[in-house]
Amino acid sequence: MLAVKEIDLFYGAAQALRGVTVLAKPGAVTCVLGRNGVGKTSLLRAIAGHHPVSAGEVAFGEKSLIGLAPYDRARAGVAYVPQGREIFPLLTVGENLQTGYACVGSDERFVPDEVFELFPVLKSMIGRRGGDLSGGQQQQLAIGRALVTRPKLLLLDEPTEGIQPSIIKDIGRAIDYLRKRGDMAIVLVEQYFDFAKELADSFIVMERGEVVASGGKQELEGTDVRKYLTV
Image (cartoon, rainbow, N blue to C red):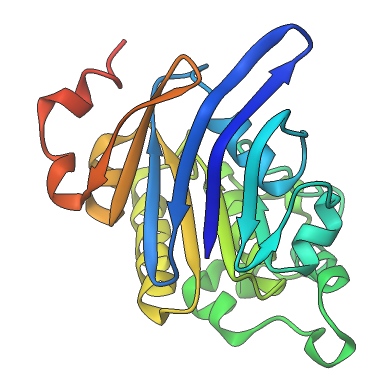
C-alpha cells in the first residue's frame, strides 16, 4: 500500500534522509527504529507531506503522493499521529475528535464506535478539555482523532514516549487490533525495543538518515538491532 523509494530530504543545507526505502502493507505493522536524531520523524513527515523530498518517490496504492499537500494526503487515507500528540488543549475531547471530520464525506461525520471501544476513557471524558487530560490520555485522543478520518495508512511517531506502562499496554492492544482488521497499513516509529518487537511484522533501522538494517519479525531479536538503539 505504501512504497517509499530512495527518498532524500534536506533541511536547508543539512541532509536528513539519504536514499531511504520503506514498504508498508495492509494488515501489517512496519516499525522504524533508531536513536534520536537519525531521521525517523523526518521520514514520517515526508510521507505525510509536511516536508518535501528532493529525490525519490512516495506512492500510496497506485498513486504518487509527491506534490500533494498534507490535507490532500489525509483525504486520500493517510493519518499522522505526531510525536508530542499535538491535540487542541482548549477544545473538548469531543471537539478534538470532530476535527477529523474535515477529511471525510458528510455521511461519515461521526466518531466510529471502535474509537471508544479501544479507548473507553475518551467516552467518559468527552466533555473535558484536551489540555486537562494526562499525557497518556492525550496520546489516546490523538490516535482516536486519526481513526475518525478512516485512514488506510496510519503513521505513529513514538506513541509510547512519556506514557505510563498501563496506557502503553492499551495502545499496544489498539495497534494489534487495527493490524488484525487487515485493511490498514501501520508505520510505527519507536525507540522502545520491547514494544516494537511485540508488534512489528517488519522493520527498518535508521542511522544518520540512512537505513542500515531491515527484515522481518524473526530478524528483530538479535543484538545487532539493539546496538542501534543504545546511547
